[in-house]
Each structure stands twice: as structure tokens, then as C-alpha cells.
Length: 98
Image (cartoon, rainbow, N blue to C red; front, side, top):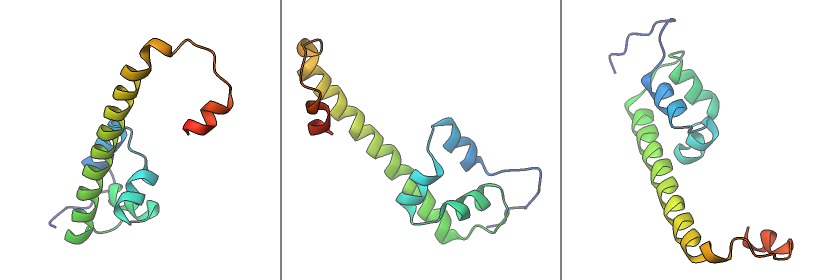
């Protein structure tokens, strides 16, 4: 990839991931790349292949799109429930709604 590996540098991927609170576990699950490998790549402790770069790029987008969809669903649910949020319900309803 032409990346110069230096011990005093990290990949911007880590900065982006931390800034947007994307965990290593979340990225690993979406990319099928291990947590350890992603960390090594971010710290520039192992080479980054074009294939892994593509996997991680796609995984970031998947994570962000999933979050966007979850946020949209939460907003829709909020709008539906807004007038009933301060009503008492059985505690088991929390478990049932998951």
C-alpha cells in the first residue's frame, strides 16, 4: 500500500473509530477481521493489504448505516410512544420489548 510504518504513528482509522465510538469488537464483527488484527493494523504493527483495507472500509460503512437505521427506528418509536412515556407499566414489559 506504500504506507511507511513508524512507531510514532497510527492510522487515521483509529482516530475515526474512536471519534465515532466504534468499538474494535463492533468493527471486527462487521468485517470478519479479528480485534487483535485490527488493533495491530491501526497501530501499524502489521502490514495492511488491499483486501483487509476493503473489508474494514466496508465494515465501517455497515456499522454507520446500521446505527443510522437504529436511530431512525428509535425516533419513530419515540414519536409513537411520546404521549405514553410516563405511564406505569409492568417491569416485564422491558424484557418483552428487548
